[in-house]
Length: 266
Image (cartoon, rainbow, N blue to C red; front, side):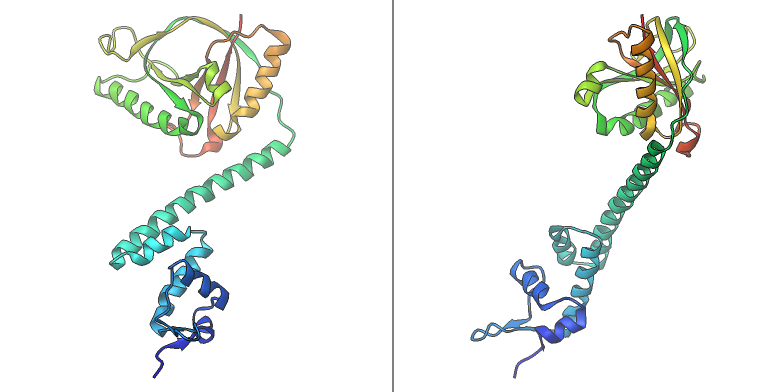
């Protein structure tokens, strides 16, 4: 006696087409309970509908077939839940990024507000700093980790920052999408003098504009400020400085960020 149900009947149980079920069989993702040697007809156990339902939902979430195979092969429900949680976390991150890009595109389509450019002759500034060669895609994480370290060092020394924290970006960073990025926090003279992270930002003259809003849109302020410098000044091939008047260490709302973009000029 033949056990199980036909592929047509199983397709009604799980809402997957017979063509899709044949494909999943071919790649070893959902194997029938039995295959007739003479006719090649596939038979499924009704209990397999649970795996079929799971596959259909995971494909609806764009989970790669290789990851679905891992989920199905997990020996316990807890392992399946952990694999699903990792995928959902990635999806949420991608969704957040997509929303940020959409919002940024809408702001780009709006008429940009004019920027105000000021000039500043900056004296040397003693700082606690971290520096590393960083790829553009890794900048946010590098800044988060390094600023946590720098603020923690100051707190351990029982002192507060002596000015606005910031970071510098080498010309190579913009040209090659990778280059030296320095994060820094100003300190008072005599504070952590022996710390190897202690350094001094050199004196420079800057053209300065304030960017209001998320870092994702900072390129718009860079564009406007760079155009102003090209028209009115002589730019130096020195690192551009960002100073975070209001940043992630102040608020969790990116719309409230205020970033000074400081363009080195002669």
